[in-house]
Image (cartoon, rainbow over all chains, first blue to last red; front, side, top):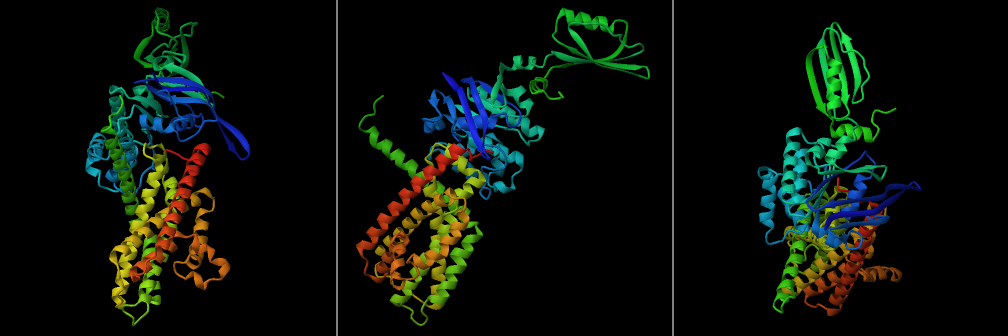
Length: 314
Length: 270
């Protein structure tokens, strides 16, 4: 059974008398145990889609099912199977301690009243907040709040987790720790639908990418396939001294930039695909040159993202 | 697998236990939040103390009048606390982003609302009881308690009717764009017209109907009568009926609040 099935989903809003379509004919599925990242620019429809799946928003048309259950017709049953991890500064009683917040919201999320204490302690421990558990949330840093959001979201062992911008505002250490926690969920077979602008999160966690553009699905690909959307496999930066490489005509590589100052030259190449042809052309280009550095940077998700959304184009 | 006859009662017991746990946890959270609110100091502390100092009959340490005044003032101030503390529960939850958690949670959000109203009302009642006791001791007034058991029934009636009114107000205030102004506008007219402070007989006949619709008024009538040893079942029945009507209306409106928020997309999770 699919964890998430979305078919023909659409949502319109009325703003100042005008109808604005936030989502239009969105179709995609998520398999059980899969981590799927929803990508897109601001306003692409990611949050609207997540809100519909979270049962916080009704769709204008189409269907969305979670483990076969329609989110519009049977929202109560959907809520039993999934958990929404909130993000940002809101979503807590700031005057209460983390322990009190966690106790209350874990119970609302379905934790049994009998085992509540154990669930709270285990969840605090899992996000490293045990020592600060009795402090009021209003004294918490952004990272601590984010960890508390996760603790609440994961407390009841949901089958599906909806994660919206989990690492936003976190320092690199906190973000890495959080990614490790999400990875641990994957190991337990939890299905995760992740929304993030942090492409590092997506690269490290996602199995598949669903890219939204203007409310529609622009791409729905495995992560490796999405990375190929960059249009090149890698960039190579070569520096050397003496005579620079001469211009030439190549099919599998392209010259992106060329500089030559005070006897030192630098060229940047894009390799469309790794092959004997591209390697041969690189060899031919640099033949006879005194190369001092040779740096290869594989194409990253960010390159695909920029190409897909036309970043840098006029 | 079909459940055997022995399983059914234990399942009901489990459900009941869960409902009570949700009510208790919600009440506990709201009581702690109410404790930190400056409004509670003014509405449940300063205001009743000032009114009691002015209104309690001096030189009549144990009289029917002092008992009547004491209960009337405290119940009237409970109304003020209700408007601010319970009436603003949903609005504050929306602003804090905690309403969304309640809606996407597994537990019935209506139970959470009732529990939170109960927490606000119970905490306000405790503060009012402390203030009432302190002022009575200060003035040397000892209220009459003819039957403590019936007085306790009256107190429960007051608390339940206040919870039902708080549930209703909380939804009404969030369904209108002018909820805060509506709260302000309701506060003093109900002091005057609600029948808790000023006896209905003193009002013009065409205005007396307002007090008839306020469950707190009937609960106060019963509590005063219980304290003085002449309780009537009619007041208690009226309290129960109006409490049920207010609670049902509140829960229906709460459904409308949630449905409207889901239709318009006004609930956020960030």
